[in-house]
Image (cartoon, rainbow, N blue to C red; front, side):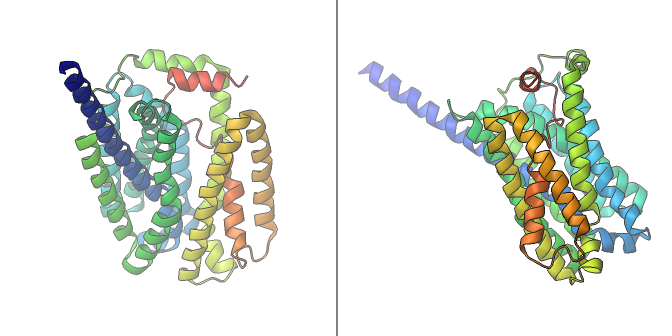
Length: 346
């Protein structure tokens, strides 16, 4: 009788832990949604932002390019700096960075301050996903780690489709500062949820920054970072001027351009999922084939005189441009697990 009660008690404790871990995963997904919205929503705000801050459209486009470069090159070092603390504390710290950056974007008095704020959010962005992927796999029940990581990135997927569309429409109706205020609100909600539900028992802190940065001695790490950086640069070279192209070259109204961005975001989501599935089968073959698809998409996009008149055009461009599975392989930490995944592909 006593053993039966003990077994029931342990079962109830396991159920409670799994329920808490499930809430923690959803808090990470909310953070992913907020970060994804903050990353891509500026694409639809560039023209209005340029007018408001008295800069040219190409200058305003640097807010997108510099963001991408900061994610690619800066985030791994931010994650390395946080390698000596627990993963929960690292995630909370990064979310605070992202929140502060978005608040600064909301109240930025000039273009320079806005640029600095975007760099802060970008550094938090890349490091967050590198660490959160590990945390998601730790929180998952046995045998469901991959599904938990997929749930984390579902937030980014939804942001590409829903968050960017709503943020663009809000920015067009109430101004770009209102959109950044919305992103800051999402960040604050995600931060509160993470503090409440992400357990304190998470690992981390076992490796110092010297051991993390020692990974840079591996040529394969640099190669992975280079591929990720160049492919991301290709994507963001289109994203930076997508809204001006939609409005001035294709002749779309601002609302029609927002719908085209929605289709582009849907294509990004489908491409990301397809790239991940292909990479599970043969990572190197997938990367090579999809980078070729990248080139085809960019060339065809540039050669079209009216590239977005057909609804399928922005969607298909998004699929091809975001499908390479290497897109974000340089972000996050140089953890032992990540090094093993990269070096395995020699």
